[in-house]
Structures are given as structure tokens and as C-alpha cells.
Amino acid sequence: MKAFLAILLTGILTENFVLAKFLGICPFLGVSKKLATATGMSAAVIFVMVLSTAVTYPINLLLVKNDMAYLQTIVFILVIAALVQLVEIILKKYMPPLYNSLGIYLPLITTNCAVLGVVLLNIDNGYNFMQSVVNSLGAGLGFMLAMVMFAGVRERLESCDIPKSLKGLPITLVAASLVSVSFLGFTGIIDGIFG
Image (cartoon, rainbow, N blue to C red; front, side, top):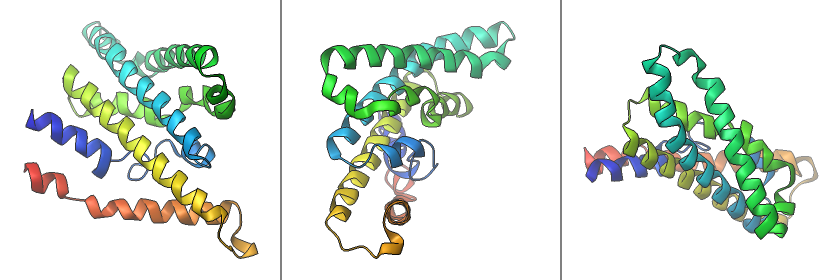
């Protein structure tokens, strides 16, 4: 149980996919203007991360067993694409406002390197099935934490008097780097607690 908690907290805080590994930056910058949109996108990413890990783990075992590990990336992308289509269908049917507000960023979850990255890193780290699922959940929650924090920062920036030369993308990148630097404070905390 202690190991699972350590994996979960590591995924959320110290090895945050967006702020420490810099994976999933496209939706991080594109969908974080409003808190509701950032939360909806994050929930979709968490769902896809956890489900894709659960589906790809046994598929990977079959690929490795049959000496076809070289097909991992292609197979994983196909599985992720199918799951994203499922999410799109569900959101379009049951949550049309969220579906419309996510726009082009929803299908981009398929190519979101954070989703593919978590699946591949689970294999590289040698995690078993449950550890992989917990790591994916932690990575997804870390993605959500980063998105929600950054959406809050961006909403606050809307009411600030920003110099003309920094308006738009420059201030967004400055704010993103400051949020990222803030996560450096978590370095070593998991080892200190569980080490």
C-alpha cells in the first residue's frame, strides 16, 4: 500500500508530466484559459490515461511474448485513438457544452504525448499492472493539478495590467514557467516520506 501511495504522489507532484517532464504542453497552453474547460479536459485525459494503461498492459505482454515489442508504439497509439473516440462520443452526447468548449483539443488527446508517455514509462519503469494503473492515475491527477493551477493563474492575469510587449503568448509562457518552477519545491519529498 505504501508503494502505491508513493507511485501516486510521485506522478502528481515530483514527476508531474506537464511541469516536470514537459509532456502534454499543447492542451496545457491551449485549454487552460478557463477553469471549467481545464477541468473537463483534465477529466478526459485522466480517463484516457487510466483506461489506455489498463488496455495496453496485457497487449504489451502479448507483444513481448510473441517477439513483437517493436510494434508497441503503433499499437498503443491505435488503442489511445479508439479510447479518445469513445470519450468524444460520450461528451458529445451527454455534455455538449464541454464538448464544444474543448473544440480541437479533444481529438488532440490522441496525439498528446503525456498519454502515450505514461503508457511507455510504465513499461520502462517495470511496473506491474496495478502499479501501472496507479501511476497513470497519478499522472492524470498531476495533469489536472497543473491545468487547474494554470487556469487560475491565467484567469487572474486577465484582470492585470500587463505591458503591451508581454501580452498574449509571452505572459502565458512566463506564467507557465513560474508554475513549473514552483513544483521544484516537491523534489525529494516522496523519498523523504517513503524512503
